[in-house]
Picture: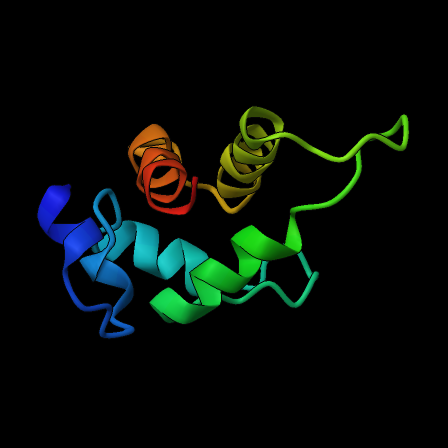
Length: 95
């Protein structure tokens, strides 16, 4: 994970720890109809950032709640394994 955090991001979605061929396919699908197709690392970053905002009480989401929201978004895309790895990569890199 250290090499990922310190390395150059190329855009290849499978460079993200926890994302293999199966997860790549699930992220690239639009089965939820929400125009949330993710095919590159850059789009994954964008999806993560789109989830940042306010909770139901008007409070700004903290890091933990934001990462939980991302974890559940990955689940909604059908990713059942390595979600915590994918979320941890972002948490460590963006805090």
